[in-house]
Image 1 (cartoon, rainbow, N blue to C red):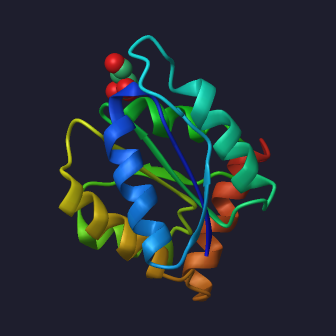
Image 2: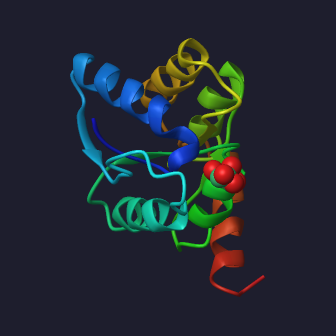
Length: 150
Ligand code: RB5
């Protein structure tokens, strides 16, 4: 899978770790930065280009990290077509893709360790979108909200 990854300083170490593991697992990874640790940087500068790339189909899925994952998820969800969520548990990493078509996984570099993060990421990339009518119906309503129709 072609996956994009982005972080600010709050998740820089975790991003480097996950990037290496994803490549070892055979994925193509696009690194949207940060490309070095700068404690004064801002998560929108990295998360927005990632979210735009996911929305444009340039990468299939995204992973966005900041200190808590909150700023990254708030920022990513401002982009039309993005369904980003802050995930801490295995169940949600899987069901968030299946039922809700999550296309950006957000995590906190200060709240999850590398092994838990890798379990979340590998679960996320292995999960597939459901085509169950009830899931599609709900997602259709989300799209209507995004379009200002609801
Ligand atoms: C940066 O210190 C921190 O505020 C940011 O990484 C993130 O946690 C925001 O949600």
